[in-house]
Image (cartoon, helix red, strand yellow):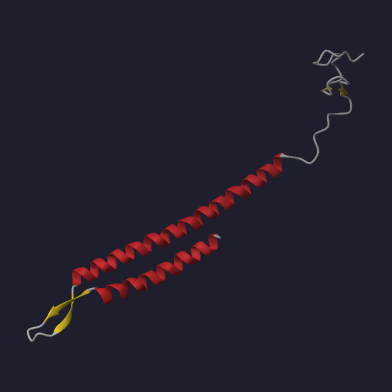
Length: 126
């Protein structure tokens, strides 16, 4: 998904720049009446520049949003991978077994060191 967002962001930026030129070129003219009564198109430079800048701004915003989403997805993937690695390293398949010299309380199941005669639950070893 992140690669799709990056690709779409790049394509929309390139096509948007080309489209901004075309849009400004086509719509940056005004109709005026010549001295002879004919209608003619006259380039209105302030209008052309405003149309070009506005369309370029919209295209840039859209492209940067798509590329930002791709960056967020990439970082989320990295965080997820790190979490999975940490979980895998902290959990083990088998629980740590106490040394064989320890004794297990038949009442509560707690493992006690050999030098203790009474479990924490009150059960006596002897």
